[in-house]
Length: 332
Image (tube, rainbow, N blue to C red; front, side, top):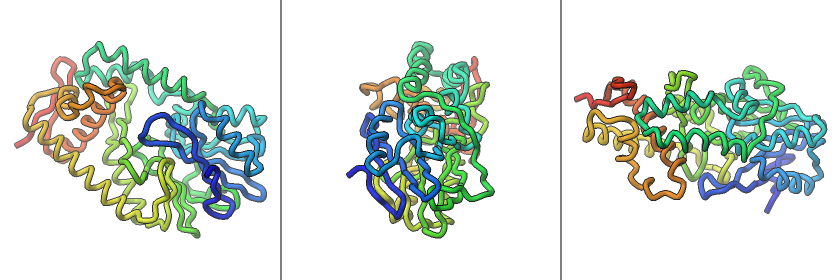
């Protein structure tokens, strides 16, 4: 059923997204008396689906007052430009300041930053020619850059339809990931921060120099604890089904994280002095036969790197540069 009324004046619309994980994108329309707000947009490939489903509930692009993004990934902002320009520029596009750049330009950092990261992780140069263009072609296909007119004010409630939402910063999946909480109703719109069926990637937060300064894994789980304190009654994620039992999802995340940490630590212990790339290939042998090898390779390297950041902070491993490549040693 599409669209579906999930709460008075709030509709969920599921839009197609290639691949089994994370699955279709849930976008949410808040239809108020004097304010119509769209939370996330889907990709540029699915904007016509969105347009047709909105018409079923009597809404055209030109009726939308606000487009709010939970974060700056293409399946969440990709159609914003279509909605804004086809809707006669009536909508105000709003996002967290830290994710403004990818929404407006299509990339969070220059391409050279990706190359420096790949060099530092020991990824062979032959794969650089696949990974770096992949990101830019992927974004170009699935999204059109869109102007961000306002950045989220974290100290004031945000009007969404007839509801007022509290903006909660939840960095980790991206720098500027946010959740929106309807406090009175006990409902949280979690974007990709909390999903019922998979653990979201805590992508490395690359700097212009290449290597991240911030630890996305640490920030992601600190953000998760922030949500635990809030204890929402219902969570509507950007992918998958509604969540009523946050505690079980929280426990699943923590268990998966601990298991991955232990597993990567054993990989370092058994393969001392190896690069991040070497450990990623050892730790994720299944990617060799993957039909989307280049993407899976980058995800594997990123996953190992972000966990190494945590392990190094805990004093379990140390890293050192040798010939521009970061090598990892186990600490007894």
